[in-house]
Image (cartoon, chains in turn orange, brown):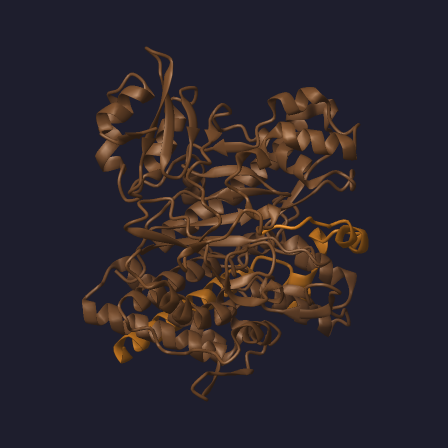
Length: 66
Length: 528
């Protein structure tokens, strides 16, 4: 068990390093270097969110199920 | 093996037609099911083996005491004529009688699955698989099938139904109604059911920390603003019982094995949320299978909760994961601590028994990684778990001054599960690399059109794919096929789910001239 957890942590660290690399790689060519992460993702979400949120939510009415 | 057993999922999709808000859900569901192209329109469903009123505790409920929605074995509940009669009275101009003459409400698919109208929702029941990875692939394949069916409606019906119908893989409309995402696990009949239920309840009550889909709303009726981990938790009222639509129990006792009832039970799990994130789907299925294996080996940790139904809600309403639950022996534990106990016990049992495979090592790796994340920083799992992905976005909106009561947050919750790829927030996050994929898109696509190779779903799917006109009806454990030389229909029994695999029947299927000949040669038992 102990051995397993160590190896799982190693893997996590490796994965984290790989992801850092990917992020670094992804950041270079794009012109969004100055935009922070939160704004970035929320802008992406805003771009697909239904414009009339209230109607969209109100219109979703279901009958019973299991 | 720790994670391997016969299993499969069922998804009831939310269904709406925004430009026709008064449309009856059964009409919408029928239009969706009827529009799926890649299926044998002729094959009906075989209801004879359904026994929804048989209770695993050893007795049977009378039909008169049952809620009408429990009578799923009475095929007439679902015939188009009956639905049509009801709907004409309600809304006579909705669809022409010609539609109901040929509408198909039940389809058996070439991947071995069933796509059908279940009350007021389209439902996909995945084919039988033998491990959580395959079950995940065929569960996700169902979403593509359902999305493709919904997207075909306007093409198929043209001017008679030009309004788009949209589907959602969620479990509540946040206005008092819930619909399910069920899992099925085959367990040996020799396993005592009461002790299985006793040991499984604490697991199910706390599993949402891994497999919750997240919900922006609190309460079953009179929903108030707030975020909780599970879509379903607020809709459970009892620890154990037969119903699935009313007075919902944590452990469902429906005893309908769809297999040799001397050898097997099918444990029907109804507490789960519909998941989209691969890690959530996989760990939901893998951890459940592992806990059942622990129970069968008499080594499940004893974590009996003092008040399981209440515990389920406490856990769901506590996204910071700090709440402790009272156990019957007086201890207090968090949901994450309890889930870790199951994972450690499973790892110990697998080590002890020498059960080891690349797949189980990978599954354990993901399981422990997620538990560690939940312990250290739940938000670090925004790229793996559905509820955390939603919660993380909601927290970020809160920081911008958009609270959880804002319509935008409600829309976010709903749109996360929208099956239209261009609208789905889950798909958006996945395409941005914000959610990790465990199963490649090609494998999910393959599961849309091909059955699992190592269960009887192989025979069902291949038979439907190859001789769609000859299969009169199919059920989980039966196939009714027409003999072209006599025009008579024969019914064949497949009551062993692990039989009729590709290895066993592929060569017979390939060298037979028709479905009847193939089934005669395979050596299945013929039943009346």
